[in-house]
Image 1: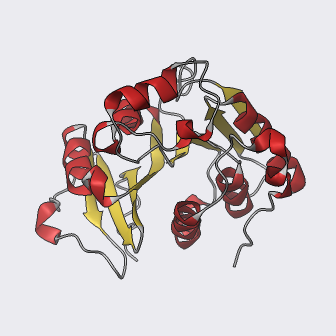
Image 2 (image 1 turned 180 degrees about the vertical axis):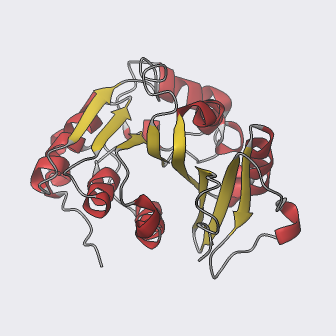
Image 3 (image 1 turned 135 degrees about the vertical axis):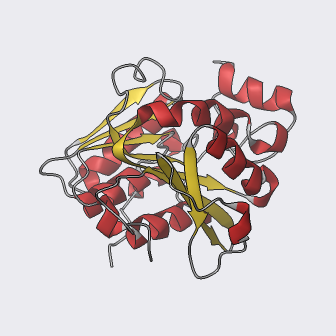
Length: 247
């Protein structure tokens, strides 16, 4: 069992705008650990909206530091600083962070290169104006950047979903945290339109098999439903890796 990364610096006042690891974080960590056999050997990992840096530090512990490069982005410069402190605290020197909006300035250079893409987005349903202000107004310095998600809680998530297929490498795997208000079935349908084909997995899955086509496709989406949220995982299918999605 991989220990949760240490983040003692988050108790300091200067990091009050950084989202502390919480239940949704731990759901994501559990999903990553369950898929450790798929993640090992990854060479480029990207976490969008890294916040504290806990998730990427955990991912680095799974994949190892000798070959892989771990990139993170966050709109909050204090969160970027926190990610670097977490990396140092947990002896993960290959974690780098970029203060940017989602994958701005990176998407072209990372095209088809990302083996693991992770996003725990602002998923709380709010007024659209509140989400736009939280994400776009530089005067907003508070914690609301981490949770204000707009209509259906999907305003920020939808922006990244349009980029996922172009970012993933041939072995790429994408993890997304969602809650029921985000309508996970609709996310699955939208990703299928984008060429991400999937199937539900996990012992407490509440999704119907018939909702997800089972025919081969260039990319697949795997869904794991946990008690307090949903982790969606999509990966590039590889004809040389039959059955890799079996649990």
